[in-house]
Image (cartoon, rainbow, N blue to C red; front, side, top):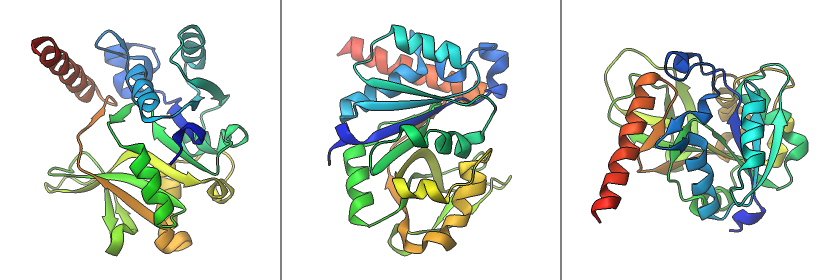
Length: 244
């Protein structure tokens, strides 16, 4: 699987309203985790996996993101897809359509990180003849997350919104593999990939809508609590490195 010829779209345009009390008006993917922007950690992992071409879908505080990555060489080809008005997570991916060159491409939330094996992810997507594949993880407590409902052979059969009831399940960890033609199924304008688009795919795609199940922890800096937890995780990793 050749990730060097597979595009990655990273969603970097969210308002980050839940983090304002912690990071002010900054774009949340630029929030410092350790000594650098959170997105640097994401980009470094993608480069190590073999990606070469990244499309940053920017909106809120777009100039901040663009200026930083034009000035800092991450060893990647970085393109910018700017939305002038908020388009939501789905609209941002659709807005990047003219920049996407590969037949299969990935998209991910810029405020999440999981050390996914993207080679295996793409291999699974192609082997299953999937049109859309979501990365999911099973967690013990889903109270703060919506859950993904799986049928036989990892086919996605539905979604359940988060509810104030204790229990485990599969959760979307914010990384997706698409066949490029799926962009034609996406509506124009503002929409949520999670709330407006994915829920209709079990009917539209059937067995071509799959889940790539991983057994790994993931970082999410979307709230002050999760941002603090990510800081602590990075600190522990650094401390272990110093001891070794």
